[in-house]
Length: 262
Image 1 (cartoon, rainbow, N blue to C red):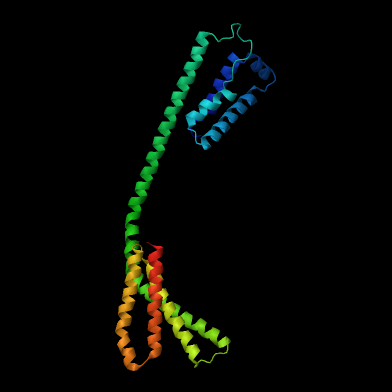
Image 2: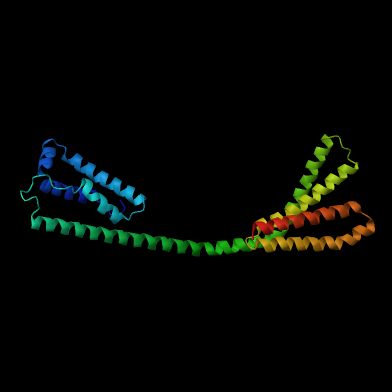
């Protein structure tokens, strides 16, 4: 397991500690064949509490320092020594072992962390290198198809708008040749045409959304401006109304794009 978790090491060290500092309890557990279960429980509880502290933000070695004496390395039993103090040599050996064990685990945790960080960094670099050609070609492709796709989608959307609007008007009893039928059809067609053109182009563009929105708006305004004169000469007032709806829709859509991506 991670964080230097070694049940066998903990278990054997705890066994030695209990035998030396908890002889009464050790003998009772041994005679009742419960020693192994008690040691396993101590190891499991130690690890569980360590995880709880680590989840709370403590480092692994800090958690180990806080919980190791709760179950594994418990205090000596009362009356074990007449002077109520551990022998100097025993205490020294025990403290030395605790220090060495703490240093060893800290080194293992640091080494493991460095290895995992190195592996993750290497994988990330490899992924970036492998994906660069794919990302570059995809970006170029999106710029190439942006304008044609926007025109196609806008045209199909405007045709759909005519069908839906015409069906709705017919269901309400409007004549196909009435003023209001023509008004709603022309309005819906050109409003949807402008919105579809701007939003499709902006959606396909891999970057610079604001510039794309403004560019499509300028393109539409220039194209419409060139068509105004023929419309006036032919006195096609429905075409003029459609051009007005188209320009208005494009401007409103561009403002929406600008505010969304600023």
